[in-house]
Image (tube, rainbow, N blue to C red):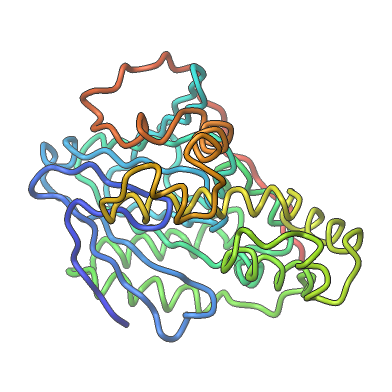
Length: 303
């Protein structure tokens, strides 16, 4: 397992606005490389340092697993002028399809975030991947309350990020199963993540299926069309390109958009605000009103 400490870092669809003491530790698992893209450990034991942290998450094709071993975040999901806040999410899985989630610690922070590969996530989460779109599904409903309680206990007593990553690796490996996921949909997801600009007709031809069959299979598994999935996959590439210091016009060119205007349009349509506003430090943002929270949804996991 490789581990890197990166302060003030963004990874995947997640960006961290941190104090000088804060920064996630990133890890990759050789054992679970086919299932897990990256693991991150936000370990900030001092309450004041933790409260100086803000995490922003934009839509992603990758399902996320979050496990807290200290105080949980307060989560605010925003889309345009609408927002919803909740603080009852402790351990959950989610795939953000629209809007932006802003996570703020309420005290000492200890959080493990796992980014799964969508084409392989069914091996852990089951075949009903559409259940996780814009929802926080409690991990106890997926894996059982006793398993999650034991996992939290092990993470809490671990002393280092390496030990916590080893705990997560062991937990995930023990819960892998042979999926009954549609192989066409899984292969299509992997190809679209590699090349979000791949046209659906070319994708279908590459998979040797009709566009109709591809669309139905993909929709049944992921809850969206291949074109919608590709739009999100392309939006995911905007932040890595911008972090390299490119102008927004250069970012648009590098990520396959026709021009900057098209990139801003697609980004705003999916995220609910333009990219330039999203990357502002939290202190420059005008807070939006929050509504009452909702309960955690529970999926019916297929055997």
